[in-house]
Amino acid sequence: MHLLACGKLFGLNFAAFFERGADMGTLWVGRVRTMDREQPLAEAIYVEDGIVKEVGLTKELRETHKNKITEIRDIGSNTIYPGFVDSHLHLMGLGLQLSRLDLSVCHTSIEMREQLFAEAQVTPAGEWVIGEGWNENRWPDRKIFHRRELDAIVPHHPMSLTRICRHAALANSLALAKAGIDANTPDPQGGVIVRDADGEPTGLLLDQAQYLLTRSMPQVTTERLVQAGHRAMDHLVSLGLVGGHTEDLGYYEKLIKPYQAYREILEERRFRTHLLVHHEVVDQLREAAIQPLEVMGDLSFGAMKLFADGAYGGRTAWLRRPYNDAPDTSGVAIHTRDELQQLVKKAREKGMPVAIHAIGDQALEEAIEAIETYPNHTGLRDRLIHGQLVPPDLRQRILGIGAIVDIQPTFVSSDFPWVIERLGEERMADAYAWRTLIEDGIPCAGGSDAPIEYANPILGIYAAVARKRPEEAHEGYYPGQALSIEQAIQLYTTGSAYAVNQENVSGLIKSGFLADFTILDQDLFDIDKEAIPEVKVVMTVIDNTIVFERETV
Image (tube, rainbow, N blue to C red; front, side, top):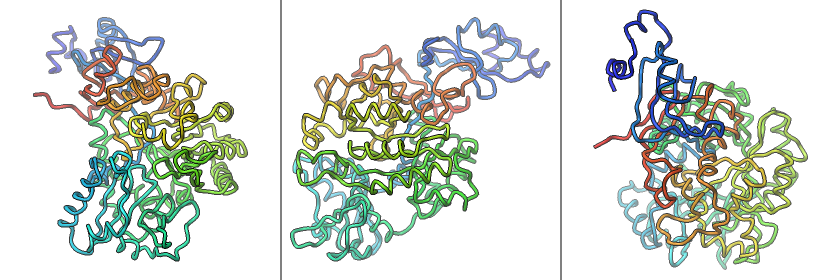
């Protein structure tokens, strides 16, 4: 709406305003879901300098701030929420995936074969064919390609194909040769080179063994990372996300490369970017003249990131008891107990909290014990990432250390029903048990782990309340663990804010909070849960600035 027209409509004297030279203010008008229990629903928001000053009735705010309002943004029948933030993703990885061969769309092994063949035809001989996202658990034949089969499909290119969980990769013979992987190569600590009956590598590399391959691949340039970052942020704001807690440092040679890319990107655009720091590059913070936990505008540094185990897909998540469908293994420990504890000690010496990837219950126990051994006195919160199997004794210990659990609701829709085969029915009461965690008082934040899962928070909210995929016609997998719509939205608002000690400035629409908003075309509280996947993002707002607006026909 034009400024003068707004003034005439609402009885504002803009001529007098400009003569006085008062501070500029914005009045947002529409249905407001504040997520603040003291005032959950409102009609309008008054904003100055990117900060919410007051929330309430349109008439009252219009009158109170009439001498300062210079812009009125009427969103009509849409609904304003606090800006959604993804608490765990890999932003650079997402941007790179958007420009690479996407194997997550393959519904059968035949489709994957066809995609690989087609990609090889357009890739110059000798250059790498790189694909991401294959998931054999979605295929009828559960096929995992042997390197010889990959050689037949792509004979003239080294090839690296990352599984959807990012805890496994496939390589053909050319790629294995470049990486120096053969029958005599020992398994690295925390990784497995899968071998056939003759002791030869099959081409499947689990967890840390993947890095034997990636070290031989062409390094990504800073320019490419800048392009990937822009591409990812364009995608994320279109999904209603105003920010994300991302883990990229440690995967692109040195910390300095992705750091420089982020600095360049955020000079041109807005996106609340919180970086976890992989333990292998934490010493490089000083080299880059970065203080631990430093904040630079939209860019901030957070916890030291560690891995305690792998994932269920490749049976590398570390369990207390063997896998139900593979009794010969309980998973993979990325570090020994002492190594993990020494890494946590190192974080404490640097004044940093930790964020520990722990999917299996044994990995989670080891992570908790390390935190108990070296308590957190930083004033910032430790994070346990994923928490997909949390028995009662570990829930009590999590409460004792005051850690956050970063959950990914869409893991329910992607891992079921096959994960029941992995764990066995008796363990399922404590698996993906989001409601139990919250009701026990454990703070939870919500993310996607993109590009492992889709970054869309609307689908995350749906998965949290429906416990299934949209196309499935049943009551959900273990529906007793379904969250309420309020709890689901809180994961991406107050939960993400709490995880990084921002609960007093972010996650609510409230006086003194950042003017970051996600505007949807429907009110999630007023629709049937099965309609949630069809909800559209109308607008994404960061610091009172519109960074995405859906085109209207």
